[in-house]
Length: 256
Length: 144
Image 1 (cartoon, rainbow over the protein chains, first blue to last red):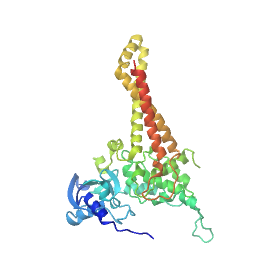
Image 2 (image 1 turned 135 degrees about the vertical axis):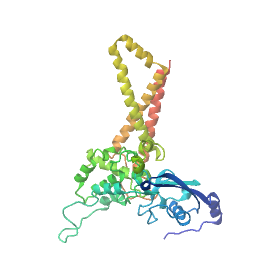
Image 3 (image 1 turned 60 degrees about the vertical axis):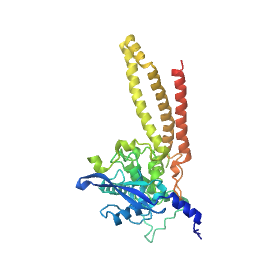
Image 4 (image 1 turned 30 degrees about the horizontal axis):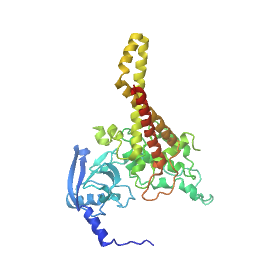
C-alpha cells in the first residue's frame, strides 16, 4: 500500500520560501488566418509549488483573457493535446510544473514544425496523415475473432519488443524537436517512423514489407540522423530514436 | 510567409546545438565538420590543380597556403576529420540498431535507452580524440 507522508513543518516552510508566489507568464499570440503577426502577452500569475503550466494558462483564460486559444483535454499526460514550447523546449503543459522550470518568467509558444491555427493551438493534420500512412494496425489475412482460428499467442518477450512504442499519445513533441522536421516539410517524422516500427516488431503482424517500402523513401527513414532530440522530449518514454534505428536495421540487413 | 505559416524552425532551429543534450551537439558537430571537410576537399583540389600551370604558379600557391593561418586551418581540418570519422562510426552502428539499447517497459522518469551512457561516452571520446589529434597536428605544423 502506498503511504503518503505529510511534510514536516520545517520542510514545508523551506519549500515555500524558495518558491516565488508570482511568476510572469509570457504567451505567444498570433492568428495567421487574420494575418495577425506574432506578439507576446504578459500576465502575472500566482502559483503554488504544484501549479502546472497548463493551470497557469487556464488561470489566464479564466481571469484575464478568455480569447486565448489553447488545446487541452485530460490534464494528466494521457491525451497529448497540450504540447507546446515551454521556455524554448517542447513539452506537455499539463505535465510541466512551474516549480521545475526554475525561472520566474515562463514563455509559452506554439510547437515548431506545425502550422499555427491560433495562439498556442497548432494543426496536427500532417502528423495524423503520416501516422495513417504507416498503416497503424495489425496486417494479416486471418483473424483471432473468427471462431475457427486460434488465439494469437504472444509471450511477454514478444510483447516487450513493441510495448513501449505503443505508448505513443501523438502529442507531436518529437516532431517539434526533430532537426530534420525543422527543414524538410515532407519528412515522415519520428512519430510516424516509431509507429511503423511498433507494428513491424509485433509478431502478429505480417505487413513488414509494406511498411518498409513506405519508409524507404527520400523523405523517409534515411533523413533521420540520430540526433536523439525526439527521445529527449518524449513525455511517455516511447524513445522514437531507438525505434527508428531498429527499423533501419531491417533495411540495412542487420535484422531479419 | 510560407515558413511563418508552417511555423518550421528552419536552418536556424536545425543548427541550434543547445536544448537537447550532448547528442544534439554531436549531430551539429557532425554536420559542421562534414561541411568543413567538403570545403577543404574543394579547396585542396583547387590548390593541387595549380601544379598544371607550372612551377611558378605552384610556388605561388604554396606561399599562400604554407603560412601560420594556413597551418591553423589545417589543424582544424585534422580535428574535423578525426571527429567526423569517430562519431560517424558511432552513428553508422546506431543506424543499424547497434548500441541503441533494447525495447522494454518504460519506467518513470522515462530515461530514453537509446541515449545511453555508451552513446554519450563515444561522443566524448570522439571529441577527445579530435582534440588530441589537433594538438599533435599543431605541434608538428606550428612547432618550428
